[in-house]
Image 1 (spheres, rainbow, N blue to C red):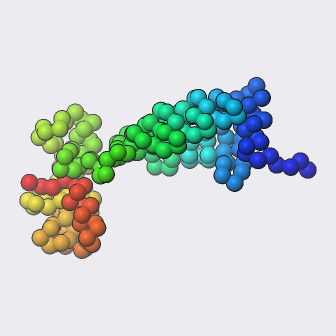
Image 2 (image 1 turned 90 degrees about the vertical axis):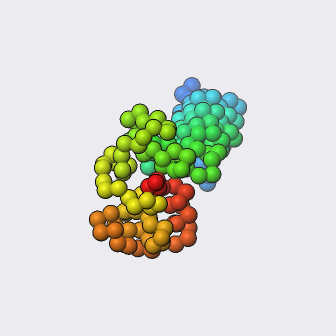
Image 3 (image 1 turned 180 degrees about the vertical axis):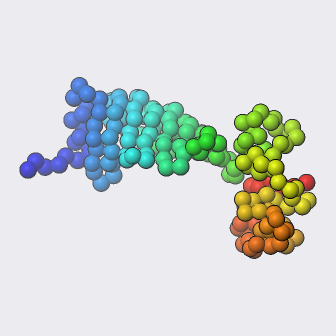
Length: 192
């Protein structure tokens, strides 16, 4: 039985082959690469498939993601500019094309004080500063929230009650901890 080659040996062998693809198996690498090489390393345009749910499509430099590229993962994709294997500019994009927070931003600005629009409003052409159209992220109209309360998926957060409250009964459903409260205030739309 032939010995299995290391990933480095497979890369070195693949550079001399006319086909520009390699299957990698090793301690650190496992997947399939199809693209350009330079000196036995991924270099130029290529596609690296780790498994059926993870693949990178874009530019490589000296064996690393480098330049414009997209790393597809379960639940979305990391899209933007890469430098030495790190995403330095860009964002995580969900399957409906909603871009999650930019890499260089500490917080996600979606439905925030800075930009209170829901994604459906953005797609419908509502400009920043225009009157908002919807009461929920799904484009539904619901009863108005009490002033000073924050829209959440479960209902709304009432800072006076320190609770998530039901939209139907306005009664508390559950309490929130400090971390969740801070996230809600930072990330959710507030009724003015």
